[in-house]
Figure 1 (spheres, rainbow, N blue to C red):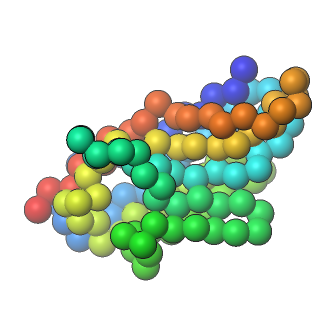
Figure 2: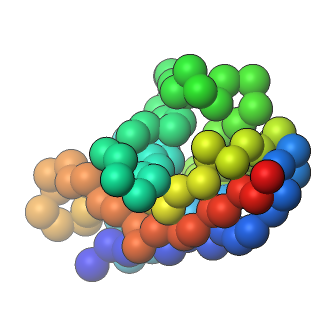
Length: 120
């Protein structure tokens, strides 16, 4: 079994900062990519940021404000969110492409989501 557990969401005023964390645990052989998506009410889930060993991707709407980082030793991905705006309000989901110990086939895993609310 593989699990992703997020933490760090909450309520913040516009212009403030939050840091999200996501820890992967379980029978993990390797982690290929880790990232963050978000979904606001009435909207589709969208990519916020993603990081592999060779590439980092950000949505245009968060470039310059959000930073994704990974601690591979801890199987953890972080999302530092600065200069938050009301339009950043959403449920944020951790996503990871993980190869379990068995079967050794890469699978997409999702966390349960953490609410981020930015007040104006």
